[in-house]
Image 1: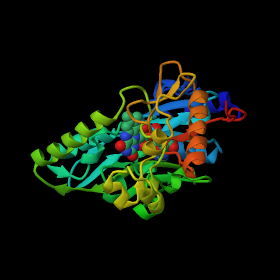
Image 2 (image 1 turned 30 degrees about the vertical axis):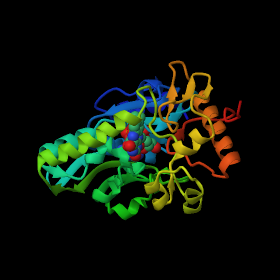
Image 3 (image 1 turned 135 degrees about the vertical axis):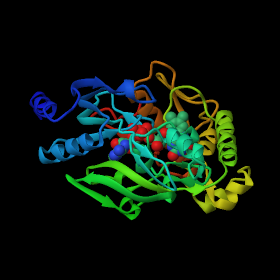
Image 4 (image 1 turned 90 degrees about the vertical axis):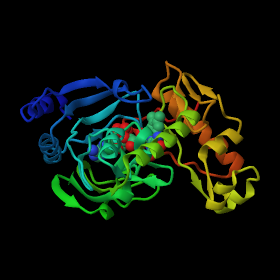
Length: 327
Ligand SMILES: Cc1cc2nc3c(=O)[nH]c(=O)nc-3n(C[C@H](O)[C@H](O)[C@H](O)COP(=O)(O)OP(=O)(O)OC[C@H]3O[C@@H](n4cnc5c(N)ncnc54)[C@H](O)[C@@H]3O)c2cc1C
């Protein structure tokens, strides 16, 4: 790709100034990641759509980025046009409209203030609405897919309005996380919310937040690194698993990692949190490679101990050629 020529062509299309080689560690909550070949922050939905269509027409790979709170970006960076989505218009009502660059917790606050319930679970999730859609973000037995009415998007260069089924949602998953997903920019959504008393909504959210503060480490992380394991037979074998989890047939990934004695296990500057074993934290000097090696070590030990292949919740993105070897 001739990125310099593409920069010139893209500049003609943009309200602001796209740039080359923006370090992505500035934009991820793990504070790791090399440069983006091209980087542009958009605040305007029409511009976001226009750039997505332009990229498709010019065969330019695109990576849409929200707050970088669910990605592990390679030290070599992302050889693509990274569109940082800051489109944040909202219209609050029982049918709420929101652009996907809206911070998820701000969407909760605005809807709660209007006496609308449904997004209480979003209060401590640090990403954008767009990132939440891609991973069907959720907590406390709720998730974003349950509230969706429709989505505006550009997929393979075509702007369209689709129903939630298009996303093929499941637990912390959608078709956009899978290999060979169609290149797609999620633009905006409509959500269905329920009227309730403001005080009751805020009380529920405060309780969720309290539970989070107790469990989550304060250091740089990407939240839960691995998905919980839905396996009834395994849940029944584990004698000290809390009863509600055994009943639901779910084994938290953090339980397995802790049971393998991996709390505090460190590779370079990346470490398994001592507070919550499913949080991999940056001690300040970690590289993406440290996180990758740490994750691979955890995967290997959990498999050897429990026969379980952990699935990652955090998405590995960018150029990983030659760096996926284990220490
Ligand atoms: C402390 C902490 C706590 C967390 N707690 C939770 C939790 O309780 N529940 C939970 O589900 N998650 C949790 N997370 C993970 C994360 O915050 C969510 O997955 C969040 O929704 C990701 O949003 P983001 O904007 O940061 O996405 P990013 O990390 O920027 O992107 C994630 C993926 O979505 C894609 N993407 C983002 N926006 C768009 C768009 N507009 N169009 C197309 N693709 C897009 C990106 O290309 C990428 O593939 C937590 C993270 C942290 C750091």
